[in-house]
Image (cartoon, rainbow over all chains, first blue to last red; front, side):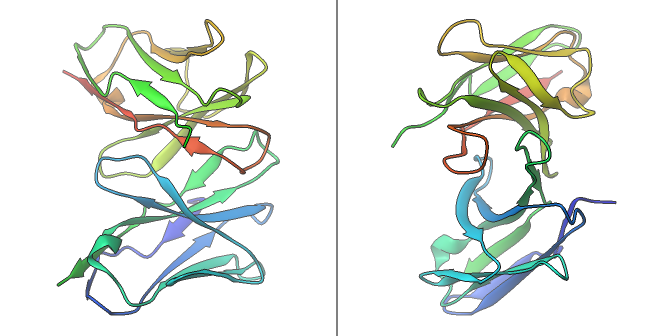
Length: 111
Length: 114
């Protein structure tokens, strides 16, 4: 069973569109949740942490539902620069704080 | 902004050869990690290192892999006898504490085994 599963994608959306990504995780002991962004052949970069109360950072909103083991990311008013692969990432301190990554969902924003 | 530095950016090696991938973590960080990403696949945890010893390793990190912190700044990943399937992007990461604050990835080394 995969630790972290994401929407298969790819998502191709026009500029200005709203797009949502979903993710589920299998380990109920997971404690920390993140969305990372990865550009082609580059390292993953933290986009935002995800909290149970939900959190927003500009055009990005992340939600966590611990009961359903479900994480989401909403991007409003998509920009061309948002084109990237979005990685759902989960961490558990029962280990040695390594991270478990989803396979990622590729987003292309079209002019 | 402090960064994790990895060298080389690209390494080509023949099957069966040994390779050493190098990383310079952020200077005040105490926890170090190696991850790998095979082309088109997810990022996978290999090993974590703290206080000069391995904290945890994944199933991927078998006897052909080893890590070392030979001095106060470098953190290396050695692959003893490379296989074709070792071709991947290898990312080093570091964090200041146990936990996620400040967890930072390097830009990676692309290893190609021919």
